[in-house]
Length: 143
Image (cartoon, rainbow, N blue to C red; front, side):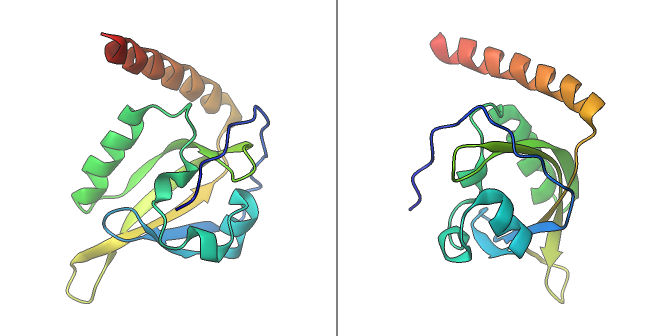
């Protein structure tokens, strides 16, 4: 099992080239491409079999992912802004699109995630929204 790094407040800009990963139904990584390895700093061997949330940055509110799971478990496509934590502690922002991976009979057997560059103007708004959600989550935990 991978030990999560301490976050460092240093962004690595995503260049938009094809960053792909696949997971099983529970979110365990089953495939990563070369760009995934480059951006996350995890080797293929380190990543495969790990839960995809090894990349979850602590600045990401749980609510963002709860909604994602609701949508993809219905067999629908989800898209959203995500701040990911690299193995070296730095972070990167992406727009993630997750689509269901289906077998020959149409049964969902996993998920395929691809990433693209975030819009810098919309990202400022998203960061503000996520900070508000995190504050609400922390306040409700403190009760």
